[in-house]
Length: 154
Image 1 (cartoon, rainbow, N blue to C red):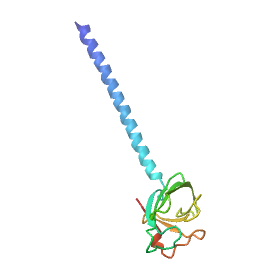
Image 2 (image 1 turned 180 degrees about the horizontal axis):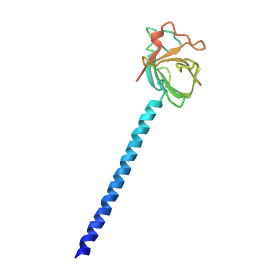
Image 3 (image 1 turned 90 degrees about the vertical axis):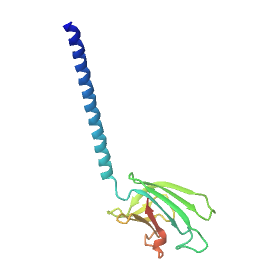
Image 4 (image 1 turned 120 degrees about the vertical axis):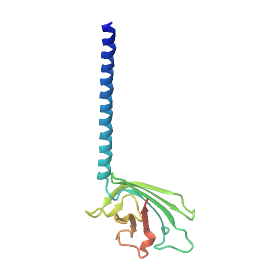
């Protein structure tokens, strides 16, 4: 009769020990995942994000009364690449999607150029106000109607 009692007690203590070990492993894995997620968020550059807005059409340097302009959606990725979508709101042109690499023009990483984009490829990132400003081609100076060329971080 004693053997029958010892075997179930021994087996149940082994099973309880395995369950405790598995729970400890799961908790350890969960804490590593949380730590990795926190580290990824801390390492991500401040300029990374999705910027959207409406700008003047490609031929204009400010908003026109008769032209609704164009919708711009720009995603800046932490691997120094981008995806740019531009759509004429007048409906005259197809949606333009461009992809490529980013080239920073300064150490602070606020002035950048979108490679593989021929026009409106000079940008200024205002991290503090979460804005992106499209600048004049080649000179990277602000447009006279500067507020017409701002994209918001969404």
